[in-house]
Length: 116
Image 1 (cartoon, rainbow, N blue to C red):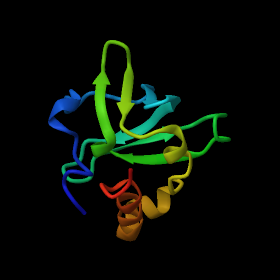
Image 2 (cartoon, one colour):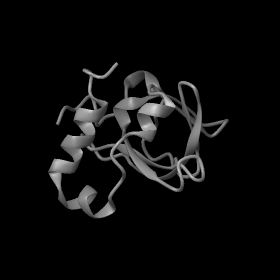
Image 3 (cartoon, one colour):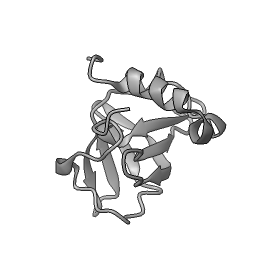
Image 4 (cartoon, rainbow, N blue to C red):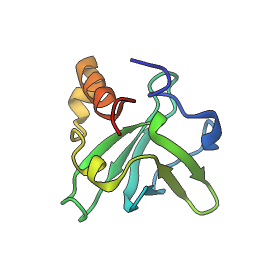
């Protein structure tokens, strides 16, 4: 895994220890849901987004490297992906997430730099 995909960009405005739970997540073309959980772990930082009714309760894992900006005052997170890309992402699997490095690799490949 690359550190850049699983770490917050220096320009994103992330401050370690900030609770992002409940923040609205904005794709490049609109809102996609709210942060259900997140991690600040070095080289393994991410947010899990509850998409609610938008895609029928699906949860998606977004590596921290997909985050462009965090607006703490507005409680919003802006990601550098569009709604369709997030909708078609591998679904978050809490069991695979914690014990299967292949799952993280699958997510990394999906969101990786080779994607438009």
